[in-house]
Length: 156
Image (cartoon, rainbow, N blue to C red; front, top):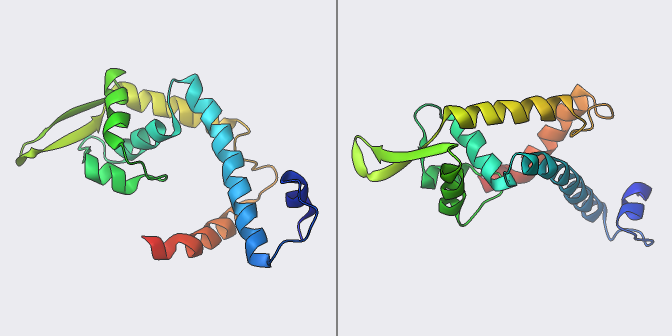
């Protein structure tokens, strides 16, 4: 049983099961990383959700995506993608326009300003200590990804 986890959540008793311990470890680790990244995003006036939208749109650059596609690709699902996009548009990081083939569909595209901002954030997060890569090897990262994908693969 994990003494580190017990200390972190201030628990003295053993966990009910190995599965419960693993789930709590995963949640604590995700929160740890989310908080570190949130600090970076805040420096640039972004929330985690706004960063996620920009990341999605950079992957679709220059074509963009309709709101429903952005929502489907979000890491943390958000019920109000429209509001996230509104704030990004106000800051000149995205633009919205109608799809030429179907005027009912509004496409959101990342601007060059948005791409530059993401590149700056990427440089900071890969050079900083936001992911504990000094404690986790490449092999560990592959194994962690494999395990996480087994957990959520049925949820696609």
